[in-house]
Image (tube, rainbow, N blue to C red; front, side, top):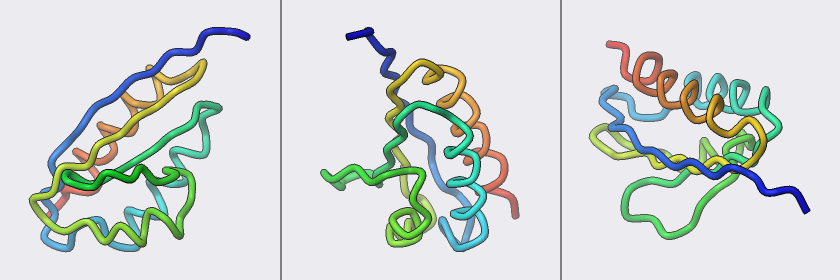
Length: 95
């Protein structure tokens, strides 16, 4: 079996609406562009959710000032985590 890359990162959610519907949809659309497995969780949560599932991402209901952790595993993991972190930092934190 081929070895795969695993990357983890986190970013602070600063948008007053938290991770609401529109950025959740855009986040899952971006995540779905990658072959890698993408998991998300809020700071303090033990359970990881599928970052490509709109239902699971919206169910997070991540509020403002919450750290979002991302774990990506697969052949394009490095590029995926870089893009996802930038997306959350820019798009999900816009005023």
